[in-house]
Image 1: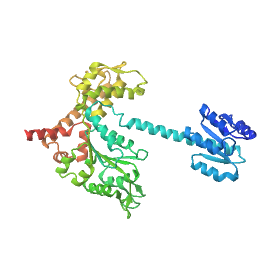
Image 2: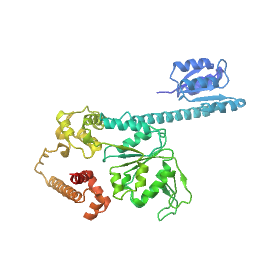
Image 3: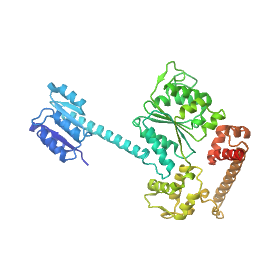
Image 4: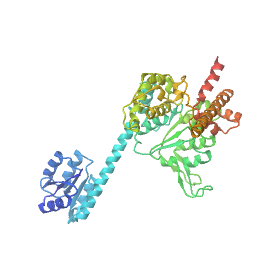
Length: 474
């Protein structure tokens, strides 16, 4: 669809020259003065205004003010003589996009118009993107009827514009990063960076450089200067996920950085000041980690200014039907816009399942079921075996050839290995009362290796700690 350009010019010859040269690419509307131009503008969807500075009735500057009041996103290009360049520059300060000097050259006119329309498109795309982000992470878009979640989103709205540090606690998959993004995108920092650092995913020897950056030559392999996450998040928000896994020697550096909002790159000689909002998250009980000597107490209280604890999905099962409907709508394009619904029995089974992986596991379950569903209804057999619970998996057919035999033998071997790993983890965690460090030492594994195995099998470590505490209390 062609763009519409409104030309306001009191010289008829000039109007016609502009019209003849632009009408092949644009829909052109003509006005002989500012008053007529304003009337045409109000009655048409104009994409750009090209106006002379000096006109009878209403001059170009007055027209600019009226257009910007009505539709500030419309670019305005001014045509001016040499004697009024200063006026044109002042007009640009008041919202004009560009200006052209008389006598105008048509190739320059076309270039300036094209550039102005491109700039307007980019601004519009940016605005739409911000609105889309706000709709994704707005505090009013969380899908829940649970009183705890509703209360949490109220806290999000209250603390969004403050600089207070926020600690978000909750099991894996409960939506900790989603809440962190909601805080950021509902704050005045929404237009700046939201930088995520997963403290458990980066090797400890690289984590300090990731957070604070380094100078060229600071250590072997530092071939050039690196800007750290704290610096990248200037005027925005830095989200430290799994803060409980941060090495203790780095915790003191984090504490110093957030107390004065200044730090030094590795190998640097000057401190760098930053304006950042810090949000952290953990699946661990940080207070217990402090008592166990695994986490600094002073850092814990510095992070714990505002605390948000997300309940696991098994404690808000009334939200499961809402979330199921949401994910079916979200992924309908993945199944070629097929209209899908879920059977009552399948929904009942999903409501009775404990969801150790929480909302993330539920989302993955729905996507899988939608892709595998044989009809327009998700049935029980479309759900993963672990969700179906007591129902036995359907027996495999007798293999018809050697390839199928190999595949089925590999699957059986994999299931047997998984079961051995699950039993191994459960018994080890029981012996060590859910303490990860002691369990890793007990079984002769690296702590990170053990955590990866626990995540693989979706084992909730807290349950083993709770059993121990209940026994002690009993």
